[in-house]
Image (tube, rainbow, N blue to C red; front, side):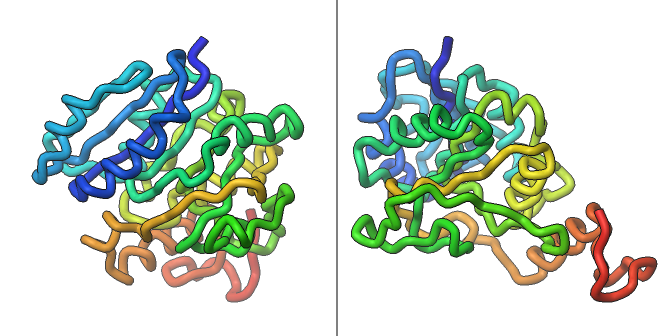
Length: 250
């Protein structure tokens, strides 16, 4: 059986992609697979991916048109066969050589885990924010969400997801077709399905800081995605006058 399905989305920024790939390769095994979804890169990324030699199976999806992040992730999930799915963004870099084996071990220690994520820098959310390995809390941190909270602040960079969780929760919601919120939505559904999300306080991954998103991210995108999220879950927001301001419902 395939142990691990790595899913990486790319759109230009070849130099960062090379760093992300080079750092992860030593951690891979022969029975793993790496699925690349390229969003019509024009900087040589596609040629690099085509020529790339890996110690495991490689699958390429080279899009000829612009697709959303949620669509890209779903293409990867559909093609994946691993016991675990590893969302590995192209602006990340492995620092600690036992990252994957340690994170997989968390699932054995915590069988109800749906997602295990390492600590990381340049990211939203106190439950996994860490600037370097010397600041690691050295403990497992459970990510929870209160009933009245809109979403768990849980960006998808370096998510390790169990196949059982993927099969239960399903695909990413493609209504979130711009940057932001799609991973918070998926995380919320993981928690609503009864799985735990755990930050592995023993492992740290370097994040170069949403490199691709900076090319096109605008404040109004996040506002649109937040509005879609609120409408989906019944939270009071602009365009949803049927719910009193300040109140919530699922």
